[in-house]
Amino acid sequence: MIGESIALAIDLLKKGEVVAIPTETVYGLAANALNETAVLNIFKIKNRPSFDPLIAHFSSFEKIKPFVKNIHPKALKLAAEFMPGPLTMLLEKQDIVPDIVTSGSKKMAVRVPKHPMALEVLSALNFPLAAPSANPFGFVSPTSALHVEKQLGEKIPYILDGGDCLIGLESTIIDCTEWPFKVLRLGGLSIEKIEACLGESLAQNLIQNSNPTAPGQLDKHYATHTPLYIIENLCAFKNTDKKNIAMLAFGNFETNEDVFVLNLSKKGDIDEAAKNLFKNLRHLDEQNFDEIITSFLPFNGLGKAINDRLSRAAHKD
Ligand code: TXA
Ligand code: MG
Image (tube, rainbow, N blue to C red; front, top):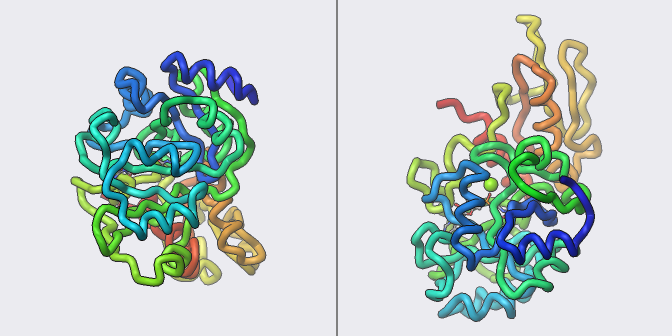
């Protein structure tokens, strides 16, 4: 059931149920992070392998402190600047956090989402919420309540509707347990902004194999059912085989009569493109095209994260 009752969401979460909640990045599939049965249910509902750990969500950085230890001073700086916001930090965990949340790792991923409804829910609870993106494992993340309803509606008691996600890409994940800090997943907070705050460069560890530090970095992830191809020049594309093709374009783009065109941002705004990316991919995926074709966006700001998601969605085994 989709609804806007924060009180109902809080009540269900207190009872150990799994509830979908809005965040500014994507919708999350949330449950009490300190209740192992509740967390196990998240894995079951998502069909997620147990080796893939979950992010714990809190209403403020102050609330995170009792669950972690040895916080690096630069991590405090990042927290002061970007929490709440689309940043997830890996910190050393305390023993009170069940191992199932971190898949046995001594590091825990923590985040303070910025969506007012998520913050209201979290503030009313005396436990953090473990929450992966609210999609079946390996598929595109949901950026609206309806997206969640379509894929997981029958498996959960409630979807808290907070409208369309403002950012539309998952949080950026930084391992803050060792200096230099490492980027594990590109996401809704640009690397430029993080490096400007730190005054130094980040290391990158975007793992590409089957034993990842952040499985959001598996080669094939964020997949559509319709095959997706990335080509160099969309404008020059000719549909010579007369296939039923959809094109995901960006910026100033002449209409191509041979294909169906959806534009991520006609004015060439990368943040707008990020907000539209998953919604547009889903929309095209629902229409039985033979193929979806697209091109990389400029590699700056959120463009890097968008291109990362496109590459993974386009990955062929
Ligand atoms: O924006 C987001 O981050 C959303 C919203 C709901 O907060 N959540 C999200 O969660 O994208 P999920 O589970 O779909 O992606 C989290 C990624 C996974 O790739 C997971 O492997 C990685 O974070 N991760 C979580 N805990 C980790 C840990 N302790 N060590 C390494 N990677 C971790
Ligand atoms: Mg996910």
